[in-house]
Length: 183
Image (tube, rainbow, N blue to C red; front, side, top):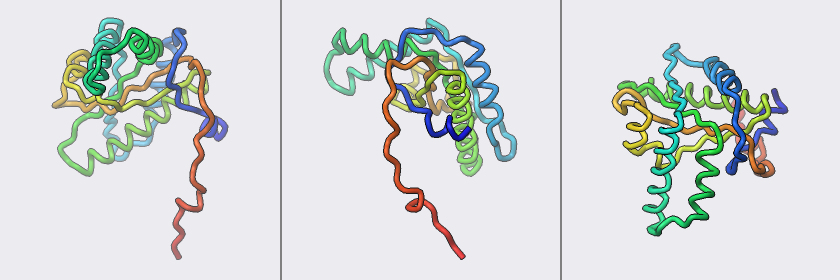
């Protein structure tokens, strides 16, 4: 377990290699085992098919063009396709709670579920990326995925696949700088 935690890396560019569905389902079973205070089981997982994936890709291209204020070149479009169409995609959403404290606890549970998912797929030889860009907040994403924003909030896209490459571990602060001991 320690080896997986220390060696797992986020991938950004993906090979066009399919991920077996059983790897994803096993990852979702691991996600289901996340700690969850009050047992609210607030996570929901959506597995978009080809039509929804294409819609999300086109929306991503549109949002990128709007952000940069320029037209997207064919080269950039191809690079974006490699990021958005090659890996498998799990959309993670959280059940909406009117109670602010419950919502915070539910988000923590969902984050734990995502960590379990990423470690599970890594154990099976795949890499992942949890992304939270503008596309997850766009109303058209909710429409494409059949998710009601009144009932669920999308908290991330988890991409799973075979990376083109992964980088070294980022340098982290010394643990002693982040640990407080009190008498």
